[in-house]
Length: 313
Ligand SMILES: [Cu+2]
Image 1: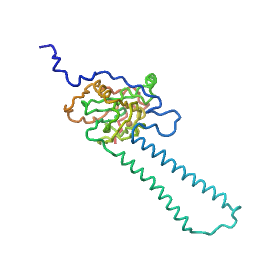
Image 2: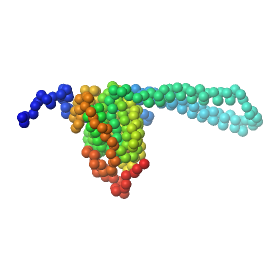
Image 3: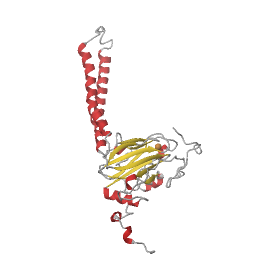
C-alpha cells in the first residue's frame, strides 16, 4: 500500500519533459537599446512595424518638409524684403489665392496624417481572441509579477539582476531580470496589467507595447510576438525610489518550448479544465516584500528612503 501507484499519476502532462528550460541568450542589438543609436528599436510585432512605418515614412518626412519650407520662406522674406533691397514696401493686405493655399495645404496635410494615424490607433485597441493565452502582469514596488491563470495560476516574481551578473551572462546591465516573462511566439496573447501599490507601466519598446499598471484596475492589451528572442523593457511610470531598477525581460519561445518552461514552474500545469480557483487579489504590498522570490533588500534603498511610508495614490 505504501508503494506509489505509477499508473494513476501519469497524465498527458508527462508527455513533455519537465525541467528542460534553459534561458535563451539574448542577441546583441535585438530587443534592447544600442549604444549611440537614434530612433526606435527594431520591431518584432506587426503593430510595431506599422507604428514604425507611421513614424519613419509619414511623420518624419512631413515634419522635415514643413520645417524646411518655413525656414526657406523666412530666409527669403528676410533677404528679399529687407529695407536695402526693398525701399518701398508693398501695402498689400489681402491676397485671396495665397490665403486659400495656406489654409487648404495644412488641412490636406493633417488629413493625410489622420488616415493612417487613426487606423494605427484603432489597431492598437484590437482585443485578443477569447481563447488567447492570458498573462497578468502585476507591478510591485519595485519588481514585476507575471501570473499565468491558464496554466495553474502560478506567479513568476521578477527582480533586476545585479549588474555584474547581467554582464557575466552577456545581458544588458540594468535590463536583465533573474526570472523572465516567458511567452509563446506567433500567437495573440492577452496581457493584463494591474498595480499592487502605486501606478507602474509595463513597456517593451521593441514589441511596441506599453500599458499602465494601475492599482484597482485591470488594463488589457493584445501582444503578438513574431519571432523568438529576448526583449527588454522597463517600468515607464515614475513609481518611487527604485523605479529605475524594475526591468522587464520577455523571452519569446516556440509553443512547445514555452510549454516545457511552464512545467518547470512551481504550480505550472498544462492540464486543461482544472479550476484555477478564485482570482488572486493583488495584495497590499510593503516595501520589503514578503512574496516568495522578492528580493527587497538586494538593492539597498537610497539614503533616507528606508522606513519611509509607501507612497499611496
Ligand atoms: Cu514601477
